[in-house]
Amino acid sequence: MHSINEVKQFLACETPLPWLEVALQKEDILLIDHAHCEKKAASTALSLIYRYPELIDLQKKLSRLAREELRHFEQVLALIQARSIQFSHLIPSRYAGALHRHVRTYEPEKLIDTLIIGAFIEARSCERFALLAPKLDSQLGKFYSSLMQAEVRHYNDYLVMAKHYSQQPIDDRIRFFAEIEAELVLSPDEQFRFHSGLPV
Image (cartoon, rainbow, N blue to C red; front, side, top):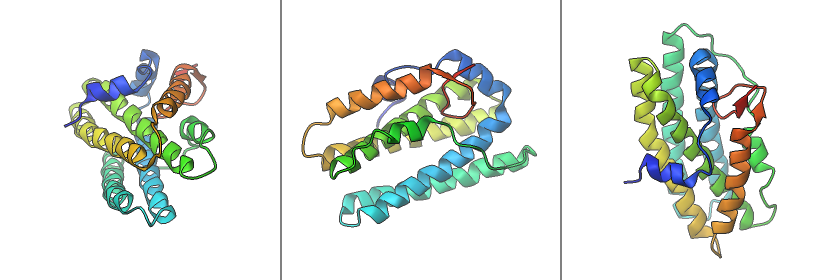
């Protein structure tokens, strides 16, 4: 069983407290963007399933992951409706796009980088759920606590697959993306989202 402490060690920095303060003030945007993130996570898993049909272990792991992310999407959507929040389109944060700009364009390195980024996105989600859960109302706090272990599992699945399909050690690539991810989390960001950086 993997733990939140393992996830925090994987990340190069902790979420800055000003992000948490804004998140608690903008619960509607937090929930709407969270729903979009769950939907996007399922879409990412499915796109990898289509792109790499010959990788059976990847097919199995990501099929389960996509189903779980869609269940989470449905659960967040139900919370949004129960709180009379209008679900709507949001411009995505810079976070995932900025990470994916550094993906190598040739295989198997493209797959390895994509899987490592998946691990970072899941790890950061988990870290933020842990940060938010004690500060939210009991219903939402309990829900975010319940999501943490799933995110830890997804982080581990992505990391295990990256190591499995790589032809060489991936420690250097993990450090490379850890620096980029930390810079995105700690640098000023005008847009508040679930994965946004330091509020300005």
